[in-house]
Length: 553
RNA sequence: UGGGGCGUGGCCAAGUGGUUAAGGCACCGGGUUUUGAUCCCGGCAUCGGAGGUUCGAAUCCUCCCGCCCCAGCCA
Image 1: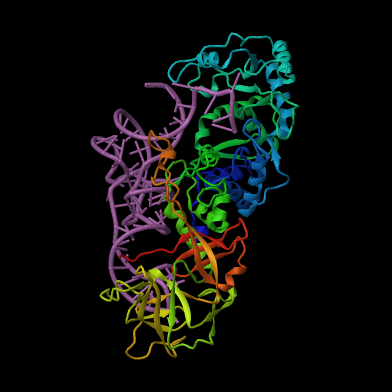
Image 2: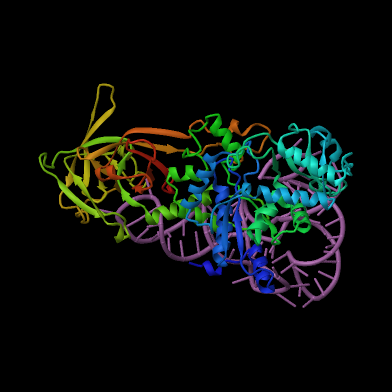
């Protein structure tokens, strides 16, 4: 708990100064996704930054859909985004905002700029506009339509809006500077014609505002004090400021940029994630291998883990790649503290305890968590026949105790929360495969130390053969087998890990887990953290992440 | 080659002229442990490079090198 010792970032410094100078009285931020895909871990950082700042300074954060391009947007995304932000545990101030709510206002501001001789209707097509724009090193040249009278531009804008002009034939442009070293300032497009219905405004509009003409004004309308976005928008800032300076806005928002989150072994680009979904490389946006919020949730990653991880990241202007291990640390940390313990045998091998009664059994009451009394207890049925994991048995009696702390013929091992047992012989089928182990218990060793002369090699998990449930376990590996899947010349799809999903059926889990519901987290002892899948009615557990594994074979 | 931004250990990152250069992840030792987990101890950099200013520089100046972003009627 060293939160108050955490150094403040550059945005907090700006806010502190603004507050001190009286330039700002209420800190208002916003999280402004375009509803053209699902939220991913990169958005989570932005969400934590924006909502976190608002919370820290007693202000508010808006959830605003930047729905200025109906071509790519969909209500499915709107709903998914709302669900994800809520699930992460954040609450926006007031109603949800939509850029499309401001279309009328934006339109009249466009007319205002035309009247100020700061905007004009341009008939250059896309190709010509590109030529006129110049290059990184060569200045552009003025559009032949640049000096068109305001009245004419006004009329043309009206026609564009009404659908009287074909798509691609005309745009409304800001009149700034075609020779600006910043290409974004070379008469950027404010409106383009799209004769397309919008998910919220229907077919009211045939023109839609561009990002640059909309964003700062949206912020101003909402009273956003600090408009925080990622680094790639830095070059748009002068344009943002130009509109803020030249329009009669209700407030004067400022834009600040920080480095977006990149994680190795995955991609955090909506475009690429959409491609994975569309081309069915994964099951959907919420596939447990996806870095989407919904995928992580289905995988079993908790909202707390995501938030703690995001809070561990710096808000700075460097663009690095965070090691997936850092994320995994927070996933494990939260689950270790909060997940109930349970036993699940993933590759069952039958063990018959010959000196244990056939007709009776016992119930061992054990804690739900080693150091969380509030997580209750569970009851483990014990009987003559149990399952252990095939990996926890070896016929090789030469294995040292240090190297193999599991069951070996003739030696002892502790069954977690139960007896110490010894393996006596193996039973095989016709093909030579071991089908059963016959062993024996050491009496009076439940909850008690081993008697003199007996030393268990280690502790292994188990489950009652008769009184346990069948389940399926899904184990995931990273989606990409290269740290920077989108680095090289080749497509990132070339680096998809073909073995990222392993489905194991016929696992045996302690009976209590038949009551597990989606969202319940468990630690399957000695294996890892699992959560019940949120799809279908079968008893399926997704492996969120394995336990740390430090021993060297 | 124009403009903008950035370079501190394997990764993330504090640091705003005087500190033994924080912290986290990873890694390496060791201890505890009925989870090879957790937990606990300990180890682990002279700051992209070269000059310069200064009693003193990661922090200031100069030059150089490297990386990222911008030439959508995407956001």
